[in-house]
Structure formats: structure tokens, C-alpha cells
Image 1 (tube, rainbow, N blue to C red):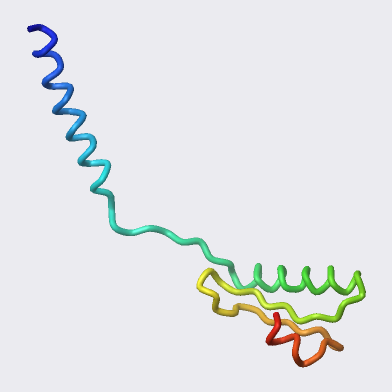
Image 2 (tube, one colour):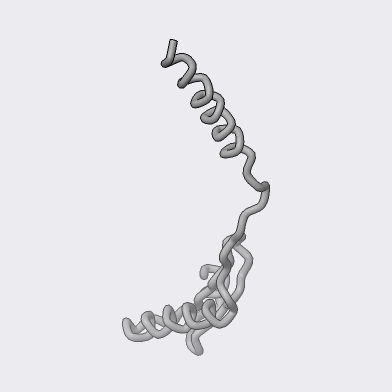
Length: 84
């Protein structure tokens, strides 16, 4: 009997806690690259390819796939822009 009196408030508390855990705010935060960071990443990729003897174009996109930065090396072919 004592156990039932003790468990009833505990069960009610746990069920209320479960309800508040599922009723979270309907928003969230996304992190995105700054243009400066995207430019540094693209330049680092071109530098790495140049050290290996490749002339390339580099595209850096945001999380939606939209191009933020597009760099084409001086002697890279015209097709490298679309391939990047």
C-alpha cells in the first residue's frame, strides 16, 4: 500500500516530464559558412592542387548547394567550372 502511494506521484511526474520533453520549440539554428571562410577554403583547395601540378576550378557551396565561391585557376580549362 505504501508503495502504491509513493509510485502514483512519481508516475504522474514522469509522464508530465515526458510531455514537456516532446513539446519543444519548433525552431532550430543552422550554422553557415561566412564568405571569408568559403574563400579561404577555395583558395586552400586551389593551392593544394597547384602543388600537385593540377589547374582546377573550385566551387564552395552552402548547405543548400548554392554556390558561395567559385575560383578558376588561370590555366584551368573552361570545362572545369561546370565540373567543380
